[in-house]
Image (cartoon, rainbow, N blue to C red; front, side):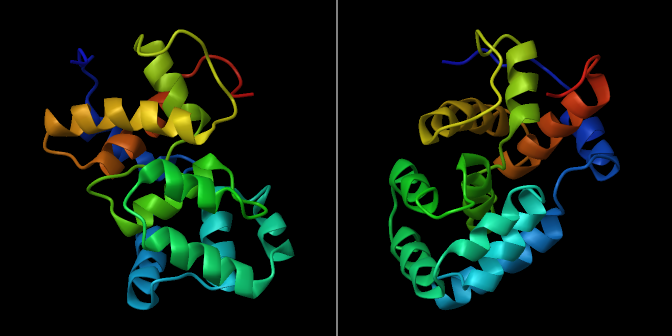
Length: 178
């Protein structure tokens, strides 16, 4: 059992709009398109990647359109988070944080968008022993174990918990992010 350290999720969720984080409403619109077809087009994947990381999203354009559709269709049909993440991250321009955004677009009641700020908040709350700047699918699973426990103990979804953790770091960080 994870011991939940308390932060004011409601407060930081309200502050999220003042951060540089992605736009949840736009993310959910892309998720709806994904649900409708069962795959993402190259353009949709680029839009999602750009929401999550403007610096690296241009790499998504290097993928053949048919590969994007096949990989996202195959991932859509899987129930295993690790396998889905592995498939998404096989595409150019898609790292684990962007793959987490894809999963969140599909199911915000089960997933959250992760990045350095989310990990940093959990690190500062003593959930992790070291800071990190890059993530693998296994790291996502570790974060989600904590976030899902936090969600179960609150009135917030895992996606909302993730946004609040992001905003917490943005509001409380005393040094540069990288």
